[in-house]
Image: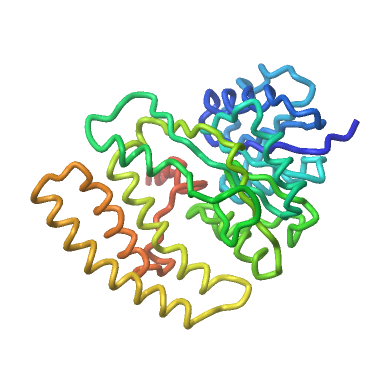
Length: 310
């Protein structure tokens, strides 16, 4: 029987986490037929053997050797058979009612894309800034259930395949820098797509310890800050006034939160990391140019080839 929903889980060198995410997907209690597509995006195929331990017939494991977050998502779509696609990141754990809650809101709202909340579960408490880290990795805006005007990232989402602009809609230009989902949803919104919020369709985000640091999260905050101007510049229709607007916002944010960050650093306030983040996001809005974009995925995470000996 052809599944109605395909749950796509891309993974890159985190087989244990992908296995946990897949097991949470298998445990979904909704009555709709679904499949799970696991995409190993490591060129070496490091997750292929561990993921074969999943013997559930609804699970398909595929290898996409072209490292890159967009490549991995597109590979999952090529294999997926469902008319409805759900995305779950490899560090997310879905509650048993997750898929059913997404489907219910999609049916009621008629939305092309439905998003759910993300709650942070830290594997070990950090020495400092716990409330900051829990907020950073979470996604819990105060939307009521139903249609919303904005969109979020691909993790913990459900979309109609027919609403996608192309069979492989994630841009390979975002393979290393991320934001492939933002660019897709930006394009879909420009084409008239609708979005909805499902407050009961939540997942746990379980960031690995190496990411629960100020260094990592502030790099991500800089990239998040770059997002609005980047979308205005690279979207389906280049919007120069919007670029100028976001740079102006960034300049104001840099000045205001730069002073706040300095003051909170000197005073060693408990919530100083929140000010650091706002300051860095402001700098990102100013310095959105491709040449300074941080690279988090794909080839950027692979070991550099050593030059051959003379």
